[in-house]
Length: 194
Image (tube, rainbow, N blue to C red; front, top):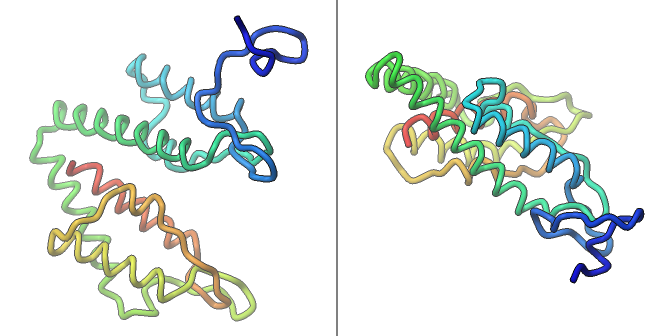
C-alpha cells in the first residue's frame, strides 16, 4: 500500500526521498537539483567518464528551500562521492605515470601550500577593504597552522574536517576566494595520499 505522502499532486507515486527532508522553517537543499547532480555523478563514475571530477563535486551548490534535503546528509554523501572520484583519478594517474610521479606531484603541491602558510600570521592572505567583510583572520590562521602541521609533521587532519571548516566574518578579513582555494588544494593533497 502506498501512503498519501508518497503521491504527487497528479496522483502518481514518487520514490522515497534519498535523504531526510527538512520540516517547518528549516531549509534544505533543493531535492530535484541534488537528485539530478547525484545521478550525473553516478553516471560519470559508472561510465568511467572524465566529465565530472572531485573538484566539480567540491564546488557543487544547491538552492536552499523549504522541505529540502537535510544539508548535513547531502554534504556527507558529496564527500563520499568526491573521495571516490579522487581515488579513481589517483588510480588512473598511477597506472599511466607511475606511483613515483603521483607522489612527486602531491609533494610539490604540498610544498606550495606550506610555502604560502610560512608567511607571518595575519599576513597569509590578501585582505578585504576596511568596510568589506572577509573571513576572520585568527580563525583562518588557526586552520592554516593545523594544515602546516599536517603537511610538515604528519599530525592528523582529514578532508572532512577541511570541508566542514567555517569561518565567521569580520571587516578587513581575509579574502574568501584565496582561503577557499588553499583549503581546496589541501583537500586535493589529502585525497592524493590516502
